[in-house]
Length: 271
Image (cartoon, rainbow, N blue to C red):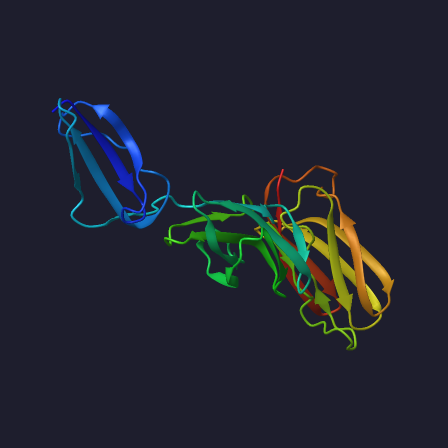
């Protein structure tokens, strides 16, 4: 024996690719498996002697080269800090790639952070990078979107929004096209990092008081408004207490009072 050639085929011997040629007869050869799937792979060794005679041996049966590399995927929108109105139409976008190819994508959302429950937006969609989403009519300050990419071998990888986003639902007690009712909307944005819009509705003409409370129920900031007509109203709050001091990161509550009626919603501040 003077040398051997080591080869492989991905099409049951229809064509051969050389792994190593003219190497010594050591009995083995390392091989970097190609990044191509096949269920008809074969290996062949061609032996040479000093007289120029050759002989070869082929795998007894086909073997499989399987894709074991998961896709990569990254959510690009919403990716944290956004504020959406309930029932509005928004775009969910992502980037996904695979060494062979992404076959499909699942898109889900959660209103309660990473622990879910997760609700399907669409499953089994093409990897076109975006889709339209009708935001649910539900208040949340802990929204996330998750995109899961699959390849043909069913390897999968998921990515969530990098941060939480907020959804402001329709006001409790307010129905579009109906007579105004007493109600308080979720603050926008929440989490808030600067000025926050506080929105409410009155069923009848009158006055209203807005309080921002800490978790112990103590009023930190208040605003009284009089002579208000029935319907929707709003005012801006800059995140300070009644003495002008900036409030720190944390959970607060907004309370609306008008006569004997009262509503309270949660507010989160980030600093």
